[in-house]
Image (cartoon, rainbow, N blue to C red):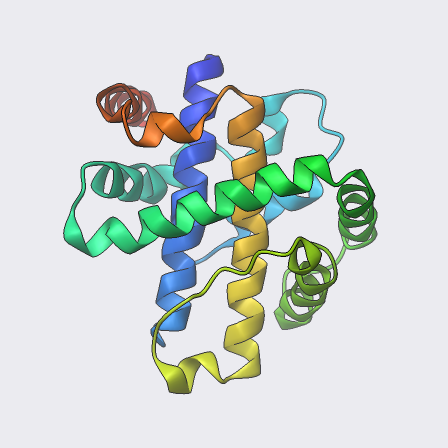
Length: 198
């Protein structure tokens, strides 16, 4: 895995987190997300590889990213969410105080079990850090599902994970324009990553 592979992996994880956001918003149970949450607590990792779960865990994200970048209708909403999350990560990078608070809060939860209580705790962290950056992501879905506290907590937790992956993606050289005018290269990078996962 080289730098480009890890950049692609961060982008794939970002889109996978957003796909799980949409699943929750539409009242679907979604899948296992521990591999999406673990990087939240890998704040002082020795290297980029140590931030992620084993790459094959993100195969769903690689496929989802390909669909969104290729412009498939059912994935376009995820692309819009991705642009918004990337903007949030950019805003966070400029706000040292909030970024520091976020790091401290996540460090305090690093050893917490991955259960319903963790989602509630991360929901609170999101609201008290990312939620204060002045930009909100409007998630659309089933109104009945969105009113449920546990669904709202899952959505904000996954958005927090998405911001983490967007931050990593930018650190590794990812830029917003690459999702627009650099789509062919991004798709090629995803295909290369998929082959390495096989």
